[in-house]
Length: 152
Image 1 (tube, rainbow, N blue to C red):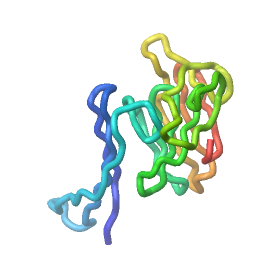
Image 2: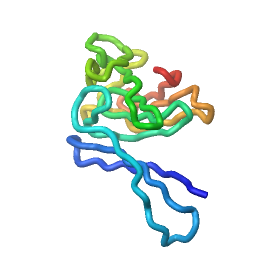
Image 3: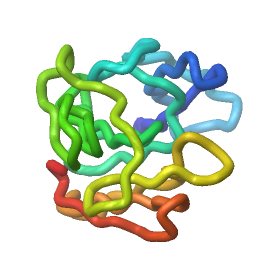
């Protein structure tokens, strides 16, 4: 029987990548087997500027960074991003074309993520419901928790 785990490496706010590691469920001395990685530094969809947290659910892999949530399928393909200004506008919006997505900016409305006084971004946690229908984001700068459908 095999099981999978997700690893995250971040080097400051400049670089983050994801790697999926598979390990044998047998002895503690079993070797890790590298399976894949995805992502690069940048602000477009599928790129990262310092990932804060991630959640894995039936709807895929969700990440939070700066002022946006990104969703990837289980193969690491970008699906969408959401937050204020992620598609070039001024409001909470969803972007589904990776090359057109931006990192977004702070806001206090529904679907927007506030800036904290200690940093430029305030997202600190993300989780998915067991069935994958709901994504919950902790917005500590806005002193609130926001819930979204799995598609933003």
